[in-house]
Image (cartoon, rainbow, N blue to C red; front, side, top):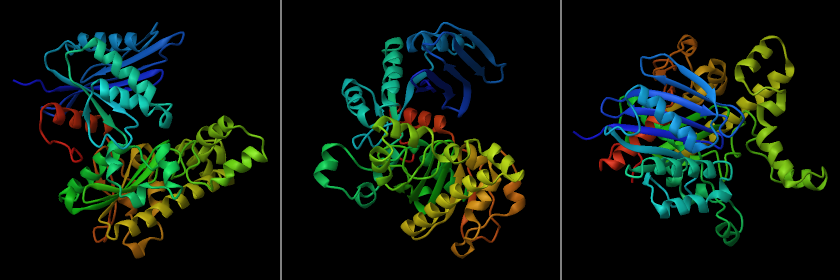
Length: 407
């Protein structure tokens, strides 16, 4: 009997998130997080299926120690990395450039290309590489698969992917729109089609991934034709700490008139802008609480957030020509009913509306929140990026076509 388990690793600079899934029945066997790697006191939190949460703090000097600790916790549940039932390890890799359009078995050439892309993903690709190399050292016999955040968006036409700058300069420095959150957009667009009882190839969907990081995508017949993030995750929607779209001359102005360095400007736009820059909070729950108390600064931040979101809904409606559904996902999209209501308010002429009672319902399952007679379905579809990574990884190593965007 073939092994059916996939370990999904999401390696950050000082953390490793992990999930162990059984692709035979789609069950989640364990989830966990190692954080504060390399700091004075590391922390591991591990939750086996049907079991109690286990937590401990101690010395976790590097990613090798972190993965060994993960393996030890899994072994306590009979799920260790040495298990013959483990089919592969799937790694989230943020940036795959133009080359990687699908999940890819990792070899030396793949590692070299991920490393070559570090200049366009300096915060993420180095950490992803560390996680991959550490896992390879622990299980050199096991297939390791890279699943790229950018891959789903490689189907964008050049008219959407190109910036209107000098072509030679753009090509020399790999400047183009790549898009991110691709595993989420792939999963949610496919699940939305399933919710409608149709095949992905029959459906046009606008996906709104709204978390601390936020992005929108226009998905036609299962393929991305436009997305809001660009060369980096800074472009597009207003986010928790990122500005999203702004006039590029703002940067020149800050450097020339404000005397800010490139690094200072980068920090401003990525870490001190968006909702936190507008009102001091990046938690939508806190912002809504402040609005209810009459806080005008919080109200303005919310209105700016919604204004940008509406602009993208309208733009992607125009790009697609026909829209069958708008799907909200991720932390804010799944849980903030006022955001969903405000985002489609006034768009009845486009066939968009939400039912107040349906919108107020909370749940973990995909659901429609639009009136029964709505021309365009409005849905809440919880994302599951780990399941998407595991699905793509397992499909690749088993030689099947089990994912909607494998090529």
